[in-house]
View 1 (cartoon, one colour):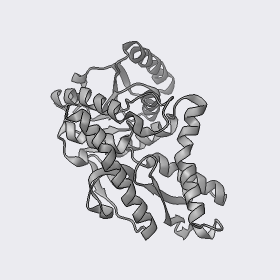
View 2 (cartoon, helix red, strand yellow):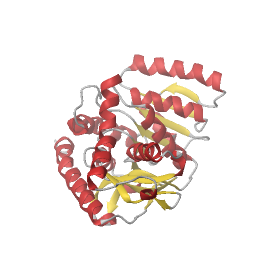
View 3 (spheres, rainbow, N blue to C red):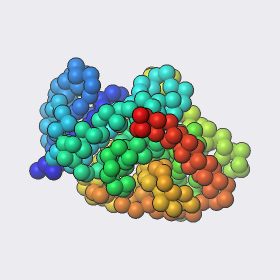
View 4 (cartoon, rainbow, N blue to C red):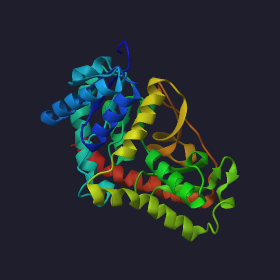
Length: 315
């Protein structure tokens, strides 16, 4: 490890560059090494970010990186992926993203890195499993951003509907970061008071409608500007802070299930204590029968989707 907090970012697209900007503004890292296949973009962003560090008094040294930088890194972050512009479904790029993992992760391991790998690469639950398989790392050292963004969108929606401050809303989305995500209404609350006290007529149809709104928000953003990146960048930053500072913070991460929520053998979005060792403990919150059935279906879908990734891993 480095003498400070050294972060290696692999993938400098919309998400990666937004995360890099958020990171230098946070002052969390003493060094940021950026690796991207597009060397002109990589160098341009490094120079732009260096200018920004002067104006923000950030302690971060930003540089173009190589996989050798992983040797003494405190955290490796994966933000590469297929262009979001033409995606109809996040699952369309499973094989592309899996190939990126096969091409990069062995180089990270060969450099001597053995720490936590944090990733936002979509489809994040499937790709977290691919990273675990290719790296051979302990399952808890692979941490995906999971349903952290979905959860933020759910909380934002409930705050607007209830006309309350979003910081007082406690509600969660579990399962796949994608088409089968599950908004957990059964324990959604405002500082301990059930959300039903603030929003009228929460029936199954309403729940399904809100679930669709949460899932469709990404596609509306992509349609308008080509990519979603600010929201997920801040999610990545929250995970980075929790890992580098060993915060033991509960975040909605793609974590490896070993019987929790009645499922096992896959990564998916669940509340997880995040610290210096990665996904340190999954927390099991109560969910109702309807939510459990939806979660089971989500896990089943993810297992099916992983078969596409296996075609790349095993070829």
